[in-house]
Length: 360
Ligand code: SF4
Image (tube, rainbow, N blue to C red; front, top):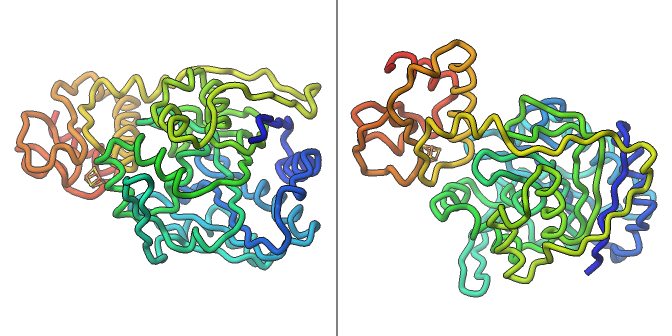
């Protein structure tokens, strides 16, 4: 596999993407008449300026490059996170407009049929349409994640499984199924948006201008680079380690090629701080990302309003609390057996704020 990771610095997402693709001469890797799928990260219906979603101008740059090289069979595939509307994300994030402008299809994987896949004895439910494409271009955002620390190429494929499977992934601890999912679905090319991602939180809110786009072919190597960029050792992220063990790619030995080093900004590499600050108030057991993220958002609001120091009992969240009655404050329907619990699957962060205020 190609061990190079190519970086371009700047702010003009579309022209940077096209320059990067031309520099690497990506067209020589794409077979003629390929059915091409592009997978951005549209986890929530928030514009890219929030730091949560892939900049649509990067996807525009990819489409223009592909079309200029004779590729016309292009589809954008995505499924927003649990309980969120992908169609709304397509609208809000600018992808409906891209679809009209370039005549590319948009597929909401939440509407898709499900295919059972067995990878070395490990069973997964994957959206069927993924397997109809010859060439998958993964376009993740290099972001922090409140449970796995990092989300980039490997975790981005989670948008290609149904919501029920997303829930099940959390009961399985996320890392192992994410690694196996990447064995089930082959990524051919990765173009990483690191223009203004949120380095702490997958839902965005605190974007940091990092001003670069990266390109590579090995999702494990890309995620290792991404982990280091956020200040982690790649082996701190369990799914990276597992993916390497499964032979999906390598964690070491990438060759960094900076196309325009003269434009390199001063990058701040740091570990997640916001999520770590609030994690001590939480007892998390197999919580879905959206539920956990809503709780973190709620704690940020409570912190701003001076309520945080009044929280004395642990806030319990996750599918691991189903059927249990523990002396804590339960967040979400999974904790309905608690004496004190808010329902909802997931509960909204505004509801959690009001609920916690009423219980402390
Ligand atoms: S209540 Fe929260 S953790 Fe439980 S299944 Fe629903 S979203 Fe997931």
